[in-house]
Image (cartoon, rainbow over all chains, first blue to last red; front, side, top):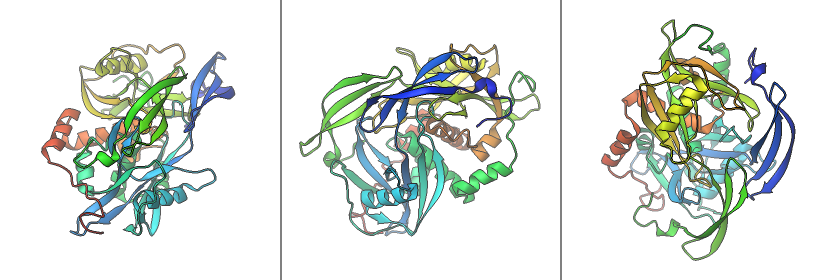
Length: 217
Length: 217
């Protein structure tokens, strides 16, 4: 986010070209110019947007649980527990994608989805967004409808245990940790994403002191 | 994390080969076998580990602040505020890398670093870890010593404002959101990473009910 006096930080794109099609993303090289004019080539990764859904439900014994997906992750080479989610298709609204992924991966539907957070997975070389939705009125409606190579177990995990213990098979995914963070904030104040940004906007500018400026520490 | 009865979720690596050197990472293709024997080829990204440091300091007016780095991010094409950090070099301990990055990017040193969290940036295709350290006894000791193409402003942001407002120029990085999440948990219970995992271990197995098993919801 640009603030007054930030010109010395701003780079400018000169050109860019795709260099490798990795199927799930495209590698692109981009020439960028620093404020002083020197040029540097950067590696970028083009990826679709992602979405995930936090779906609270009551287990038959009354315990509030969250609907999670357990699956083997090819990168980490281990089984993880994650909020259901996936890629946002071209021309698809993030909420539509979230609803579709929830239904396909878990068989659960929701009366209403509310956007509670968003994050870039890695702004160093990605431009895409991961959207986090909260499912209101979730219930099990059908069986899973998995893609051909998806092997996913649905797990109902007590919400309190996930929030309190943040277990190692969950905290193995930064985007899921971000989603849980948004959910923790939501539980504290009930704000959806737009209301949260609005609250930040109304709070006035945050003090970003430079140590050389406003006094040493 | 494998649990009893998980064999139907486990894939096995057959072979893998690097296919593209993108400088900051290597793309690798890996053939994996599903439990039923069918083979699928997956794209993986080999990347070094990362580290970041949360450094609380007092501003001259007494306000507790966190030391942050403001810089233009080439992927997101915007200025972000992030905890200082970077790559863990080959054969370097994560804590050594964190201390080095804190000093180089901000000119701050710390009496002691404590590991408070770790996360995989994206287990779908990465195997690396981002470590989050808390700096105890941080103080400004020298000037920044930036790499040739780094343009970084140091910003002291009141800790309460960052935690309370999670501003849009911060929540643009999932790994930083994860780090802030770890810090929020630390503030609540004072647990470092190993103590937190130990607490999880001693709490006994979390109930991972399958909806088809332990009763419908």
